[in-house]
Image 1 (cartoon, helix red, strand yellow):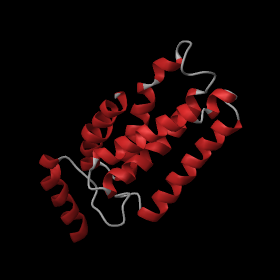
Image 2 (spheres, helix red, strand yellow):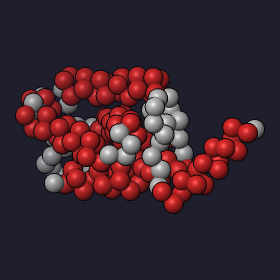
Image 3 (spheres, rainbow, N blue to C red):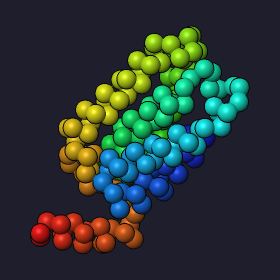
Image 4 (cartoon, rainbow, N blue to C red):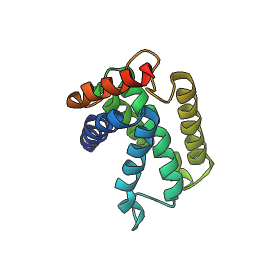
Length: 157
């Protein structure tokens, strides 16, 4: 359930507003940084953080934010797809607990490297401006006209 609330905030509220001002890649990285800091309290005590490094956690969430933005923009702003992706990631972590087998072990680090590699491939293939080859980036509706005016002015010059 918390996943649903998180995605309504990250992708449903913050991301479209950021994409109205920045390209999709920069917007994703900002969301990823905020998303990582949101989880910082887990690292300040004992419990869910295990022995994971907050730096590696942040790197993973920056890469995941790019992938989530790619899904969001390519589905024309579908929160359902992003929520399902987030829920699947969380469920996988529960049923295939590589991080609990060996905290900070090679499997956890390998997953982070794979997230980063996937984010790099998505950015190279889809392009950093929209993180989509076919769909426009999803922006806040009242800022759409301003965004389009900026795009028209940019293409005119």
